[in-house]
Length: 185
Image (cartoon, rainbow, N blue to C red; front, side, top):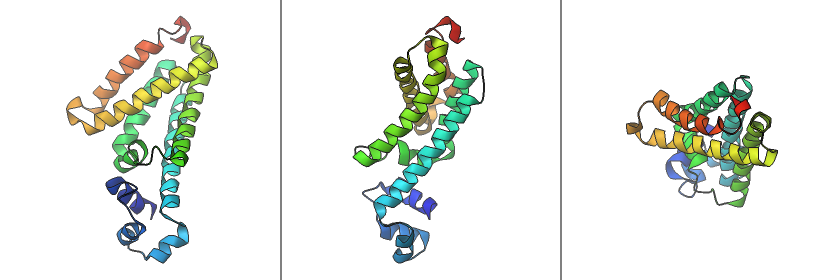
């Protein structure tokens, strides 16, 4: 049912989708759908929570998967690009939601961004000689760049293959990170 709801929401947006649409697409009755979710909003939020958690865990695992900082950056970029490539509907739900201004949805996204930025900052700060608040600022910038670049790449096939796109963004990110402090490399 969640996969069907994801398809409906990513195709029609939150406001353009109804529980009738989701029930029809899932080939279940509306009462069956309401047994699992009290309403459209709760179903939508369950999807947002699921995919933000999945992406957050993958990014943190990529960060912790190596002690080599260059590999950490490459791995995290690979997660963003891999996510948008493997999950076209989920990336639209997360990165292009028509509910991003909604306070409850915005809070979920802010928590996601802070969790990932804090994990990066914990590594970046000591390695680059940055205070934790400055490391969080740099981390938010890096993840914003990676997310935006990955979404741009998937929407614009003329930007080349995934490996080439990741390489270009890595060069930009690493070029900036590596000059923060010579101990970072």
